[in-house]
Length: 64
Image (cartoon, rainbow, N blue to C red; front, top):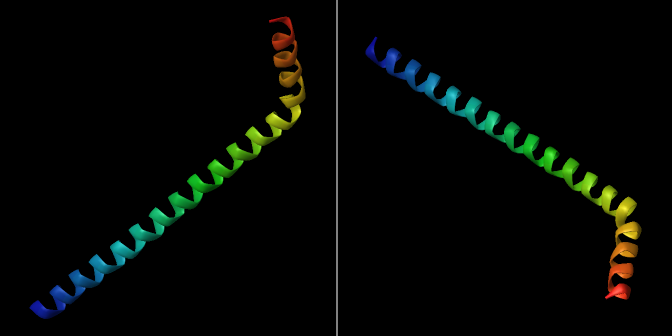
């Protein structure tokens, strides 16, 4: 009877750890997706605004 309780406790412990590892992996994937989306937005903004910002700096250098 005691062995069954110990084995049940160990089984619950192992299942809890597996569930926690799965959740940690899911969190990592979510952070990676957010990082990728931010990178895509930064690249898009750089492509769109890049020439305009380059012209501003060129005009500033020419003025100096």
